[in-house]
Image (cartoon, rainbow, N blue to C red):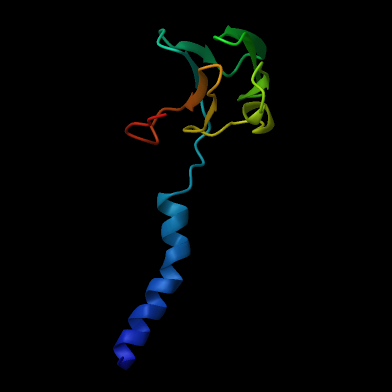
Length: 119
């Protein structure tokens, strides 16, 4: 390797954190939450108003809590409780799902973060 190769490699390594911060980080706060249950139409709720939503699934009701511009699964009838342990979500593009109960919660802002997401 030549001296120019080493300089180029050093420049690339130094630029990586800046590229990560500019292109992959998502600092946009979500404006609304979209709750999908099975094959039905998604339910949309504004994040600016604190509330608790009971959403029915095949296993029973999952409770979605909305507070201080963020959302989470407060409780769910599934066995693993992975959706509940995931905690609060507040950035646009964040997604939580209770797969056994077929309920997903996604947060959205003005600019979509992804083109499409498959479960």
